[in-house]
Image (cartoon, rainbow, N blue to C red):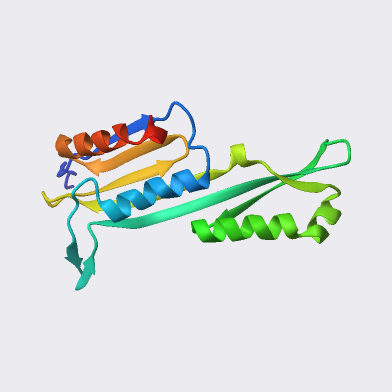
Amino acid sequence: MADFIETNNTKTATRKLENPIPDIETFDSIVQDVVVNNPFGCVGYVSNGMNIAGVSTSKQGYTAKFIFEDDEAKSVGSMSVKAPAVHAYNAAITAVLADTALADAVGGDCVRDREHDTYSHTLKCMDPNGEIYYVSINRTNVRLSSYTDDAIRDKVETWADGVAALF
């Protein structure tokens, strides 16, 4: 019987944030800054005949939380809505808050529970050394995964040190 032989050692590093990222606007501006300005110096590449940007979205997801309250502000229900992108998240919030039939069915007024919303965006990056790695950002941490060269971690850490919401 053949043995499995280690062929690659990848690393993961996580920065736990002192305070959650406060809102979707701040979160999205952080992500868009990486995509547009490429602070890690990532390079484009070709995969299966397709040109791939040096920084691209691997996956993303956003969850909005709601509470339904009666006339005494007592919670009578709750609801979560998952959305695949920021624009869908914002549209879902608007739709749920405007849905009076839903509020009537639950038996209370629908209010936002923003502090329990979740945001997650994973970026796929190609380092000039040829490594593909991932930077995952959510409200409470930034995670760097699938890298081997510590210089990649240093670049991501330097970038995060310059973003106030990521302290």
